[in-house]
Image 1: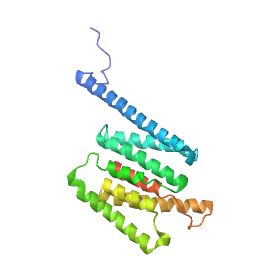
Image 2: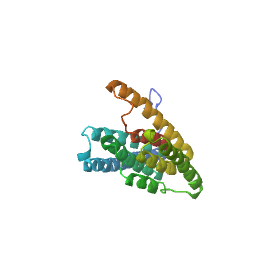
Image 3: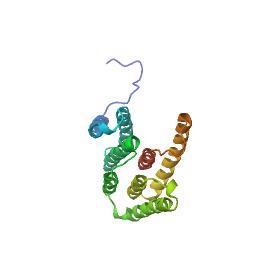
Length: 218
């Protein structure tokens, strides 16, 4: 029998290790297929709306979606939460692109988010969902009524309220603060560079969507 000069560096491959490795490969493959299917669906969705969009938005949106989808699968694995996150990301991506291109968001976006909130629904979470929706909706409605010149857009209010119902009070308040703060900072920089006035409206939905996806993931 020939004895090795140096001891083996890697541990011996046992049946348990083989099974774990095969399971990991299977999960990665399944995750890649799921992400690919959803990315293809998003591409079809964006191509369908191509006449209303600027051409560079489509590849940028697909790259962003694939990146977020990969993070969702890494964090949540192949689960209902990951699928819910992928669908939510697609919905918010559609809303963001529409807001950037036309400063309009279809009403079905709000309805889709509300329906998605019932995926994996647990009755114990309903109070937090309702409180979150009320906490987000009422202040924005008051601002719109009392200060119409500085009012938040109707689509922004509806989407943020629907997101509050899905995420719950704590996460949506976090998402709203992150989204609005990020939106204000970035738009101040952009307007400074473009020498635009602060009276020009800007797309808030993309920033709200970023905050919502960040809250969903963490």
